[in-house]
Amino acid sequence: MTMRQVAKSTDARFAEDFQFTDPQKRARIAILGTTGFIGSAIVKQLIELGFRNLVCLYRSDHKREEIFDDVDISSVSFLQGDIREEEALREVIDGADIVINAAGITRDWGIRREFWQVNVEAPQRIVRSLEAAHASTHYIHITSASIYGFSVDPAAPLKTETSP
Image 1: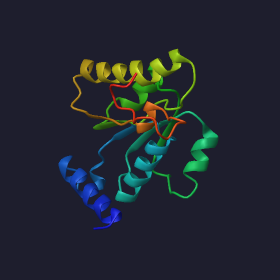
Image 2: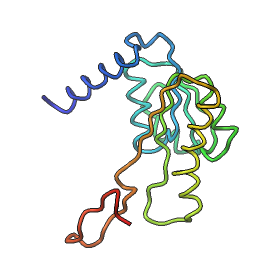
Image 3: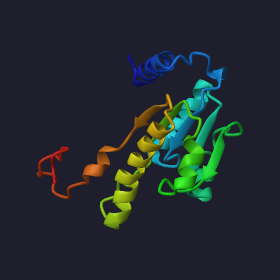
Image 4: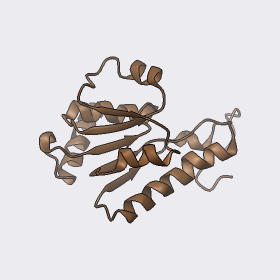
C-alpha cells in the first residue's frame, strides 16, 4: 500500500468517525495554525475532501497568500489574528464542530514567555472556552516532533518527552 493509499484510507475513516461522509453537511471546522507546515496541509486536505465550512486563523497575509496560491480557497473563511488574542480565538472556535489546533512555536530559540503563551496557555484557554460553553466540539491538538529541538551532534541520544 502506498502512502497516498494510506492517507486516503485514513481520510475516509476520519470522515466516518465524525459522521461527515457527506462534506456538504456543513460541519464547521476551525483550524488554528493555518499557515504553519502541518496546519496548511490540513486545510488543503480538507478542501480536497470537499469540506467547505472551514474557519482558519492566520497571522500573516503574505504567508497565507504564498501557501494557498495553488488552492481554491474561495469557500474558506480566513480570520487574521493571533492564538494569544482572546477575541480572535473566540471568533474562530465559537460554533465549531471540530477545533484543530496546529498552532505552536517549534523553533530552537526565542523568548521563553512567547513559547509559553502559544504552546501552553493558548491550548488551555481553548479547552476552558469549550468547557465553559458546554460545547460538544471535538478538540484535536497537533504538534511537531521539532518541539524537542535538534542536536548538532549526530551521536547524541534522541530526545524524548522526558528530555529536559
